[in-house]
Length: 511
Image (tube, rainbow, N blue to C red; front, side, top):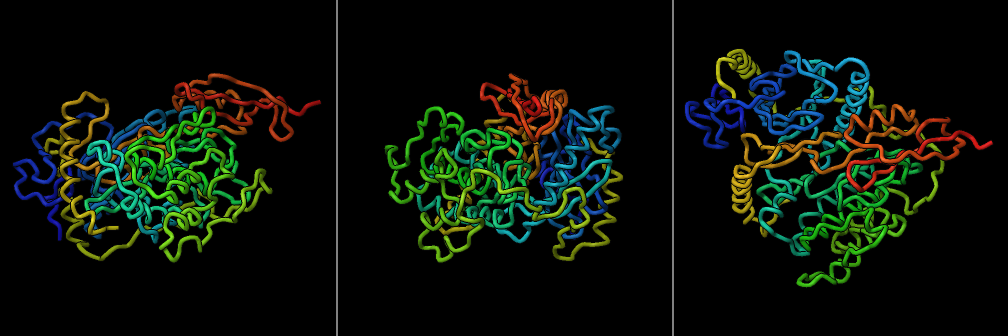
């Protein structure tokens, strides 16, 4: 049974001498805590989750390392807290009055949807695992696995390492299988990138950050919001109403593999539409790749979606021909329809009700005494000052810790707005539209661009919503529409010159 009196809030490891800094993460009660919006260490949520320190924060929430008192396992807890629309009153997250309150409720609905989507993939390997969803303190909390490691983007940046074709296939094969499973259940991730792939010390990748994930209808994939990450998002993700499907995630997966081998961030998808300067892998000096692999990645990153592979399994059949399952399981019909065939019935349930969400049940251990000890510790906390594994990759057990130490040194000697907290691993905390970096937990990248969906809303509402999200409305255009009412938004497009959008508004039916 855990001894909560010797539990470090910085890493949730056993801490023998609490008068000295924690030997695992360096946390010390003597270090004054930075002022912030987070809940204090050793707060208990849902009678089960003992919070540790904040390990990530962003405009839409806070991520904590925590201990599941029932299973005695370390978990990640993401608190929904949109700073622009709410404030902390005691332990409660209280929505601001007026329109801000409405925005708060809408964003909370998206947070619920993320939890529901993620809960449907607890059986999928190499995907961050949902554990629980708790509603408390006038807000909501998403509990996931705590994944140790460093995000692939940081790892490549710090070490300067690129990967061989063989290494890329070893690392990415399980991720491709996982993404194909998402598609078979009519879900798009929409934010596959090195920053959302956590590399463990054992050399295993885990896909995180389901904040942009959306259910899709294979018959009509137009009604999806704009969410993208430069270099990994194809052109269709830059436009509201554009057709998105498995081919969208496939582009991102190929872009990740392109960068892993070449060390080059792929050219932006929107820029490629104007002038395509992306070199095929076998035309980049110093790289050793097979022609088959180079052509497969090139096809997967074709600008025009109908020219790409239409499923991950078809891609895998070309790049992993030795896999007996590659190409056999189709996640969608092998056609690309330029126009929707109509609005089909939703394949999965409504996001408004969460009665189907059940907490993950792990090993039964530590009940009773651990709860009582944790409660006692929480009550006295205010008295303290708070301030797929391969033999080839065994060397990662040593290289990754070294990279993490170097990360700490770089951050320590740099002046940045975002400072990591007490832990030494970097990761993301799986959420929707949460611009936050997490250390040693679960998801959302700080350079992802997420545009609110204002399709069908009034122009005034659209402009205010965009402003609240940090965007400038650069241009408003009008055109006739038989389906969208006069004055309402038909669609919108991200302007690549900064955080600006162009909005298309209906002039009503043409007389």
